[in-house]
Amino acid sequence: MKTLADLKKIREKAQEEMKLRGGNVRVKIVVGMGTSGIAMGAREVMKTFLEEISNRNLTDVLVTQTGEKGLSSMEPVVDLIEEGKAKVTYGNMNPDKVRKVVVEHIVNGRVVSDYVVATGD
Amino acid sequence: MQDISLHLLDIIENSVRAKARNVKIRVIKDVGENLLRLIVEDDGSGMDSETLAMAQNPFYTSKAQREKKVGLGIPLFKQNAELSNGSFNMSSQPGFGTVLTVDFGLNHIDRMPLGNLKATLLGAIVGHPEVDFQIILINHDGGKENSFHFETAAIKEELGDIPLTYPDVIEYIDQSLNEGIQNTNMENV
Image (cartoon, rainbow over all chains, first blue to last red; front, side, top):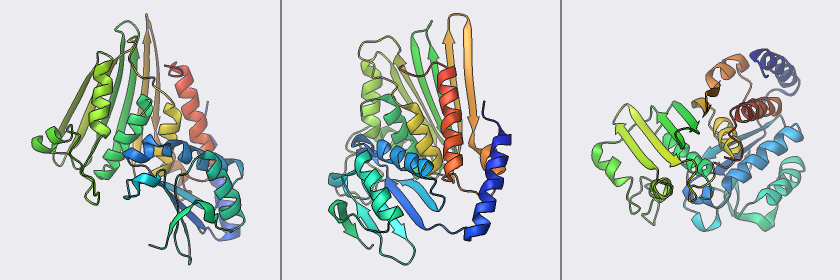
């Protein structure tokens, strides 16, 4: 059984880490979770991002869900926002593409241009 | 949508868009009553009776920026519930929130599977840190009752400024939900 005491340990560990690197969020990921996105597999895209963050221990990445953004024909759609850089929108995503974006873009800092459907706002 | 959990995710997103701060999700499986019931209750902006009726119409959407004015989420969910000899009920009060109760015939051959409840809940919880979720799973089978209660408010309080996307926190929520789903026999439903 998981207990709140486990969370206390996690908090202490995380606070220690945040002290070392300044606690900034480096990358924000926004997964489009409108009706058409969900029907096209957005839940599995979200799930894969969370698995990758957990498995690779990426402590400076945030993931959130949002509603539709009018790109229904390219769902599932994901925005990747890095401080000081133009927003990158990836389309027609699936778990394999998510794993590639995590390695290439989030870890190594190279945009995966094959999957990009829009940039900027 | 291939399963009930995907519809649930769609409904949660509706609650979030209605600016809910608290979302309570109950999944009740009752073998004796041949019933699978889903109740989603939020404290979002709510709807007046006219909007409530329109929300069940496929040619209505509240999503203003959309070019195509269709909203299939709720009508499809309703249709899928009714196909399994179930029912779909939505009540709402502007300023107070919305309650949705969806019943499925547990044994009905045309009932869609419950699907990956964990993926829906984990994504919603982590993806909407501003919303407090209360999750209750209940399994009635013969004389036995197993239940699982999960509240994200207590977790957030314990975590302080540590985000829910912190890797160990994702794992914590994932494992907690897993245990709850297994203990209430909500896998492969």
